[in-house]
Amino acid sequence: MNEKIAPTRIEVLWRPGCPYCSRLRSGLRRAGIETVEHDIWADPSAAARVRRATGGDETVPTVVVGSRALVNPSVSQVVSAVHAEFPDQADTSVPRRPVADRCVPGRSGPPRSRWCGWRWRCAADYWHLAPVLLAAVWPWVTGQDLRGGDRSGRLRLLASGAAGIAAAVVTTLALSRFDLLRGPTVLGFPDPAVESLVLGAAGGLAVVLLGVGRTRRSAVSRSAWVGSTRVAASEDVVLVEGNAYFPASSVLPGVLVPSSTTSVCPWKGLARYYTLRVDGHDLPDAAWTYPHPLPFARRIKGRIAFWGAVEVRSE
Picture 1: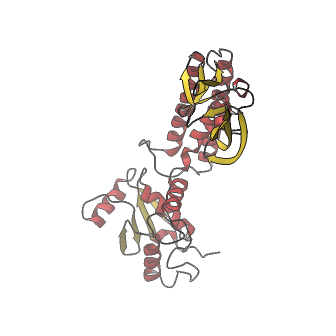
Picture 2: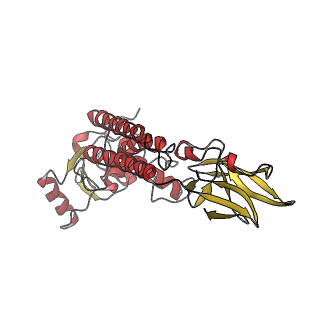
Picture 3: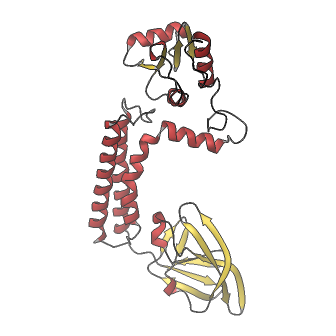
């Protein structure tokens, strides 16, 4: 285990909502450097120190290491300053540079990539928004079973929305209780926990309203044609991303021939294709289905969609 550096000599001057501050603070913790942190929005004297170090601006993060003031430094620059200022206290196990294979945004070379940097930034800076997903996912999954005119489904949707918001609130309060909600805010709230609660409730409510709107719409009727031959027709069609998904029972018997072709959608799952055999002619991979879709796309499970030479018409 790394020997900790004396925290009274290394100070981080930061402010809420600054992603650079959040990244640096996380990096310093990983490097084994203990710091004293000052929020310049809550501490006027800290803001004055930043202005003195930057020539009048309030640029953060500003790190004070002994007699040195580093403006928006990297972790490696802070570590180098620690070794220079306190050679007798900086343990050799504290690296002069961050570990090379970490996902650090803003750096080049394998295995670092834009995806790696984006993922690292979201995990380090915005993970306090995870309760928003927790609040929204329950009513969203419930809403996948709702159809136009389904009035009884509203109670299930409202119950799922309330459960999702309650779970998000409990999770947020628990994380806040153990001081685990840190990072910049998106909407300028002074506290990430407050923003998490507000956005979680808003996200859950928005998904519930979308589901209620779906139950108020009338059923969708569509038919699918290959030339003059109608291969499918239904009054219970689900529209997703501009595609009409028909119940399998509404498709003309004998026209679907399983194909070996598959594709993957990041939110719907694995799709399997069919060749359409109509009037002695084959249309390769002209239809597809999601036999086991992911939860967000549960309402299209087992349904058939068409493309290519198949014309889908409104009834």
